[in-house]
Amino acid sequence: MPFFNRKKQGSAIVGVLIALIIVLLILNAGAIWLCVSIPTAQAPAPTEPPTIATEEATEPPTTEPETEPPTTMPEPEHEVSTATILSTGDVLMHMPVIGSGSGPDGYNFDSIFRFVTDEISAADLAVANLETTLAGTDNGYNYSGFPNFNCPDAIVDALKNAGFDMLLTANNHSYDTTLVGFKRTLEVVREAGLETLGTYLSADEQKWTIQDVNGIKIGLLCYTYATGVGSNGSPQLNGNAAISEPGLCNYFTYSNLPAFYSEVETYLQEMKDAGAEATMLYIHWGVEYQLSANQDQANMAQQLCDLGVDVIVGGHPHVVQPVDLIESTVDPNHKTAILYSMGNAVSNQRAGNISTINTPHTEDGVFFKVTFSKYSDGTVYLDRVEVVPTWVNLNTNNGSRQYNIVALNDSTRDQWKETYNMTENEFNAAQRSYDRTMALVQDGLVKVQDYLDQQKQEREEFYLAQAQNAAA
Image (tube, rainbow, N blue to C red; front, top):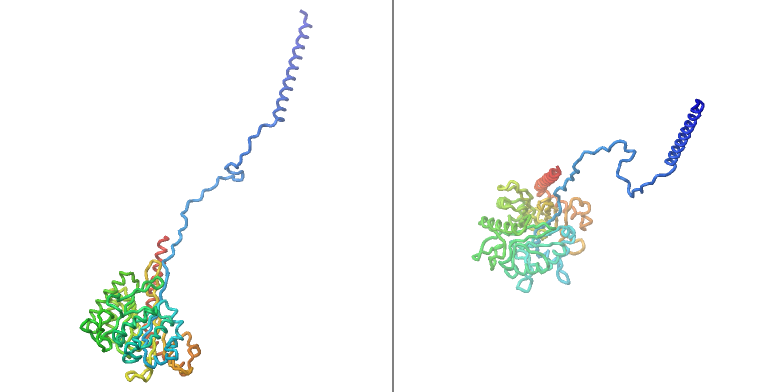
């Protein structure tokens, strides 16, 4: 086969290969176009964003070190209630005082208290010593003053209208009109809605009381001295015959004080068992017209303090006697506040009327106010002791004779004259009365109140420290 023919055959094969290469390039380009132009299927969007870090969080979050939540300090124990007891001295109804209340429609003694009603009513419990009997005039007695007192019932209405809640009925004049007057006095006072303390209608009556005053339970006792004891065990009062029924009067005799202390100790325990949180003892004692306590009073006060009495309030001398603070000899943590005598609330014992005293101290009295406080832990403390001097102004400025008790608050001294309808002479007499009373009570009052203030400060610091320790 000639050489020319083999060359032609090779050219044909090359042409075929070139054509195949072109076809493959075209197919490859088409495939690439299809991949680019046809969209891919999309997954449905999630309804909530996935919990992943966003693009902005280029660094992993740092973890805060764990700390305990801050502790809140509990509230310290604190005062939740207070009870203020106001006490005043002898309502001594001499005949001139009785006569001042006489009118065409009977007796009315409101004028005695008309200037002090607000002060009395402001107390949580107000107490006065009723030094007269209420025998009436249908039992063979007439109205009378010293030495055997018998007063119209209207004095009780006046005391109630003035804001008093309780009357002390154990004193040396309780039996001035024998058993009939003794018992009728209690009946009249109780029917008027006032409490009585110290004397009783029957031997079965409880010889003490607990008054719940703003949630503070205060146990109260009242005693009088006796000049002797009858064969039935009843006291002789004011030199009269012994009370004809036994067990009707709380009394003591100076000749047998151990029996008195034993009885008081028993009653204090009974009151404590019944829930008493503080105790006060009213006592008719001492010597008339003496401006200081005698040794018997001092010894008795110490013994009563040792028994645990919190406050002692005295009467009978018809003059104001000092305030003091007594420390127990058996419990150094216990102290007793005492006013040895409240003086007269009202009487006709004016300057010059009594041969054994040459000063006007019998015209003077006090509102003796003690305040107990209760804390949130249930404990009760004596918190404050105050003395407001009082004076009986024998007022005839409106044409009638009136015995007006006036409260001598030093902060309102510039208002006394106008408020109490005083003449210049009466105003000056009132200032002298204030000075007399404060000279007797001021030192002891400061002593008591300084101690109570210190105790309160220490108490509240202790309560605060307790709360802080609890929060630590």
